[in-house]
Image 1: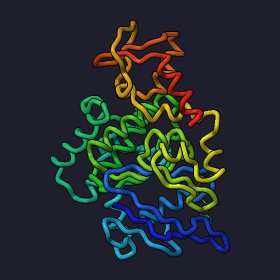
Image 2: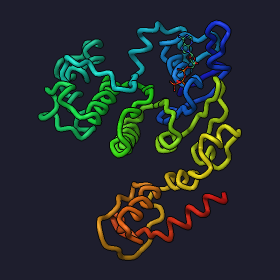
Image 3: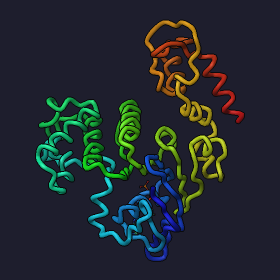
Image 4: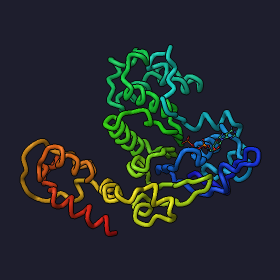
Length: 309
Ligand SMILES: Nc1ncnc2c1ncn2[C@@H]1O[C@H](COP(=O)(O)OP(=O)(O)OP(=O)(O)O)[C@@H](O)[C@H]1O
């Protein structure tokens, strides 16, 4: 569990993070969202002390991080940034092995871990282990960046706009992969994004920041339905709101019995994905993987409910 208590950063006479308090439970994802300059990155970096707080505290599992030497702290915390930051002259395996090698893991353990992570990210180890970063697509580089951050099994992973540079399709896939892997490994994750949609897709809790202040911190459904301030409402975007709410529910949760033709949609896809699929393929119902259907009528009535909620 991460407890952030009255955390503040002041540069000169400007307060860029202002008395922020929030708790992230173990195994959960907190998404920090806000406009450029709202203090998200500074808040994130105070967690691993890449930025030293002016005042306030961060406790990790009850331990005050100011009492842990910064280098020791950072070894326990994975960190992934936009543009993945892979070392260009090291192979995929060497990139992923960076922290385990620093920690002096045995070669056999390192190799096993590299292969395990590549498999987890659906990149065949035999094919990708020895490639150089320039021999990978943007999406693959991104996955290697996240694999590297996870390599030493950090209890906590901090990510700053990790998917910012990806195109929307690959980005959605990367988000899904991250969520699956995070669930499987039970890693606690704090992720910075300027994109509310990404925050909704990933966060168990969303923290909305504006001008250094934490305006709202709650589950996505609460932030979307009860925005705590006009700024939060603006960030959500009134017109988009029904669609965002659709992204909170999985197709499998509303599938009903019936038959429909065409390609199936995974039960884990969101209602928003299903709506997009109906609109793109011109179908009024989609077969759901594992059985049942989801209909355009169902999706539209959900969206209509959401817009009056
Ligand atoms: N080292 C520094 N010295 C002075 N001011 C800084 C420093 N680092 C950040 N700031 C200022 O603090 C404010 C918050 O920056 P921060 O990077 O945390 O915002 P952000 O919400 O992550 O923005 P973005 O989405 O653009 O990255 C900005 O106004 C920035 O100019």
